[in-house]
Amino acid sequence: MAGEIPFRRDFAFEYGRSERLTPLIRRVVARNPSPFTFKGTGTYIIGNGKVAVIDPGPKQQDHIDALLKALDGETVTHILITHTHNDHSPASAAIKAATGAKTYGFGPHGSGRPEERIGGQTEEGGDRDFVPDVKLREGDTIQGGGDGGAWHIGAVETPGHTSNHLCFALHEEDTLFTGDHVMGWSTSVISPPDGDMAAYMRSLNKLLYRDDAVYWPTHGPSIPEPKPFVQAFIAHREERSAAIVRALAAGDETIPQIVARVYVGLDPKLTAAAGRSVYAQLVELVEQTRVISDGPPSLETRYKLAR
Ligand SMILES: [Zn+2]
Image (cartoon, rainbow, N blue to C red; front, side, top):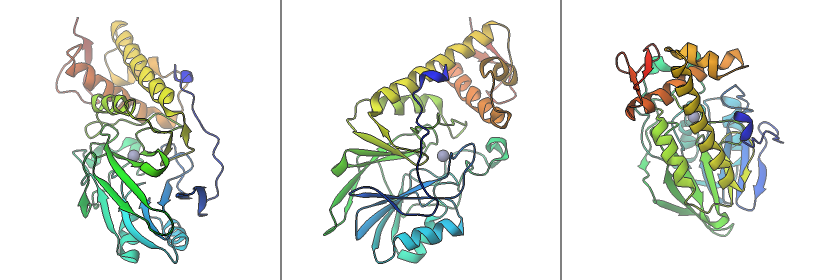
């Protein structure tokens, strides 16, 4: 099933090096590879001379040093945060301290509880220290630049991966920075309660009404011609949902049973994440009254088809 998504995993880069990607976009990749971050966090620098930074990344000194070196001689006017996972927002504190720039994001980390971190992995854990100086909402636009090229960046609300996820549209280059909402190398982890499958699907649909020429996710390579890619993700989730319904029809009642049936050949390191993904789908199916559970939906609840 997953084979139908045209994944993009060819990714040429060098850790800690500022690479020019387009006239207005540079990137520095952090050395924090994991099953959730691919090769690591890609921090984007927008503009020349007067710049915005998107997702400063993990609280990792070598990355912070590399980023500050890349920004040497320039003025950072805005620090933008797609969402508050530990591989995206924590370094904003150091970049803010070094540059005096304000931070911009939807808001602090949402309703997720710390004990619900995926399989003990901290990369995708919530950053509970981050509070944006400026809250952004749908359509809010910030502008900057100057002699090195003016830029305008609009906020696009895309809850689902987290409740506070934003994508950022760079108008001058018809580019969308998609954070972890849409990535080329993998599907997104949707982990309740802060992750919300129904919201994620709405946020995927929302992108189909846009005309972005290219996506730059936080992890991995860019996605040119993004619409068929988004459509493939939507189809993939719908197929997963159907596979879960079939597993329930076949008598499975628990999340581990469903994972074993639906995720054949899964890397054992990803079993917990797959369980959380099935859980997210079940929460949506219960909301749709297609599935019933023997208590409020959780990882331990037993599930049955409603009819
Ligand atoms: Zn994330």
